[in-house]
Length: 195
Image (cartoon, rainbow, N blue to C red; front, side, top):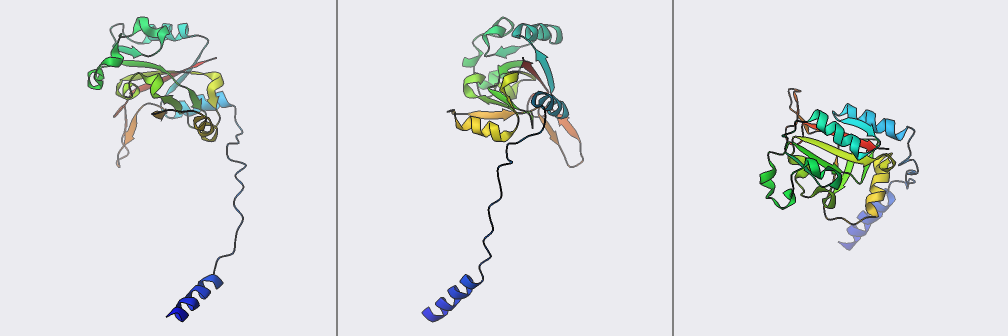
């Protein structure tokens, strides 16, 4: 029996594929595009809206102009507290089902897919960006990275318990190619890029 085992192992060893060199991964993370323009173009392509502003005051003016005054608004950002409901972070998440607008800031964005990285510390409650009807996110222009390779490098340098990439409003489509926006998340996303 050991003889047939040795013969089998000898044949396997004889028929090993040749060793091939590993691929060059140096191109990963490289890019050939203008970061901010790529971010805006990609976000528009997936149903979101990017707006460049110089300050949070411009965002407040936009909200007052485009959302009804009686909208239920929640935020974790002190600059927007005058527009928002107080102490919502302590509510049961089910009590947030009627939120019209959530305003949060992202740690950074990614140009290649328009994703925005958020962690629990920015959300107030994990459900906040997903249960709202409309979502406004702020990101500094200097915090938009070219590709997911740089994004994962940046995440690797930080500690967090919960995090998510958010890109565009909620979308789903069925086999009949019927696209529904806002099926299980926000119906609209405006990203304010602060220069």
